[in-house]
Image (cartoon, rainbow, N blue to C red; front, top):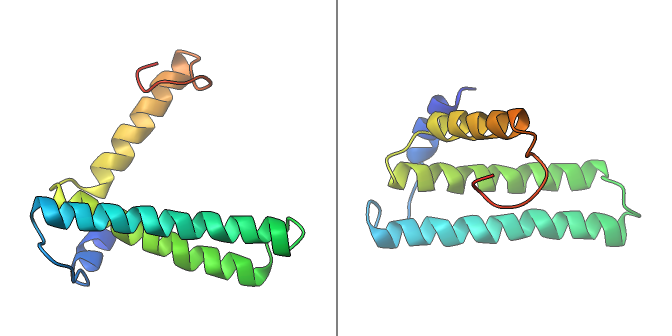
Length: 111
């Protein structure tokens, strides 16, 4: 599936207050944080409960939570009138530049 197709389809499932406003952006931004926490929680539980292994059940849970992360990221992009493709392409360009400049390691956004 292409990013544009996903973004268009996920937009049709978006039901939250104050869409197309700062409040809508805040809502989906907070939702993204919550879902990222659920991804982290499943990884933590793999360490604690599954001896550091990713079981089939844990992988299935992670797939579901990562899907929710993708949905919220898509809605943030939609709220900002940005395509997921634009985000992906700019991210890859940034990483390629860091690779060329030998600055993949380190800290700071403008390295």
